[in-house]
Length: 257
Image (cartoon, rainbow, N blue to C red):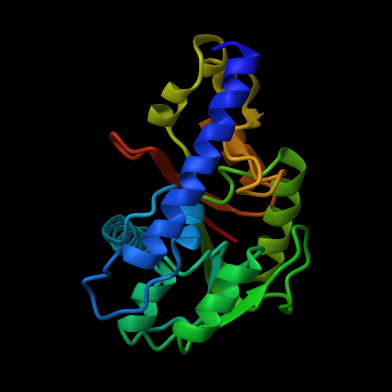
């Protein structure tokens, strides 16, 4: 697609999306007796305005978190504090809060609108708006477990290194970090030349004009090779496991401090 045509297409896409968001907030019927965040907040975490997809994907994410943390010995029945880093409008954390877990669940995000919504509707969770750079408002060694889904898939290299160091700081010794990175299936959206870059150079940060104005300028799309992200984690974590998700867009990594 030529540059001028691409610019016109992107502008038309953003305008059409804003219209769909406006209509969804006025006409969509949740069909469930649970609080549902506004369409723009749902879109920011799933790139979909579907209420059904938001709930379905969130439940799947919660199940994945529980499974992989459990394999590393983390039981929410025994944990004191758990952090959802990049919680958005509570796609995953809502399921833990609703299940009556005894652990104290915290959620942080740079999206102030999403955090305000979580504070109002997702109790007894504890939510904080954070700056785009560390630190977080927690003392050292505060959490038993931290999970972050679809966060490092969007950060620049310097931002991811800063945040990995900060998450390591607030995780107790023996605590576990779970994060996701784009898997092999996700690289299919790249052109043929770019598709080989993650494997060759380890890390690729791609900018998109399509969502300009809908997400922050620094919040783009990042691809990691397996060797690259494990080497980054080895600086602060003694044990790491990489789980490639068959036919999945994102792979799961768990690391113990």
